[in-house]
Picture 1 (cartoon, rainbow, N blue to C red):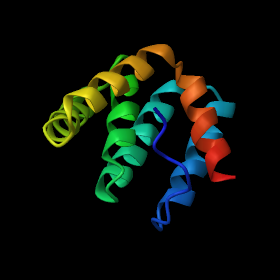
Picture 2 (spheres, one colour):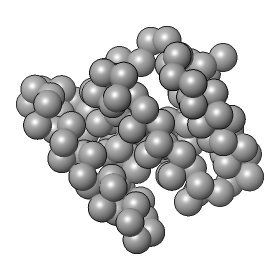
Picture 3 (cartoon, rainbow, N blue to C red):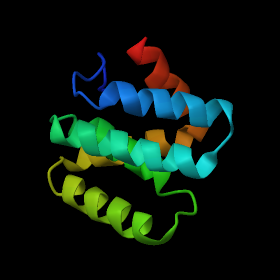
Length: 112
């Protein structure tokens, strides 16, 4: 399941993707996770809820700092109640199958 077929038109998305690219190249895992959370938040706001849920499920598999745990959990819970159970199960499975680098590369490739 890959519901993101075109780059987001949100004004912040280019900045977020640039940040993701930089943090990938510099291997800054914490920054990658934070940026992925922000991307998921933007996507959720634009109605790309399944894709946002998938991204957040992957982010939640990593150790997170302080308020980030609460933010990710809150958005995950909110999105889960808006998605059908099959979409939730598929998103969780895909998040389990991907690595952080795979997801980042996928997002960056789709935005090119």
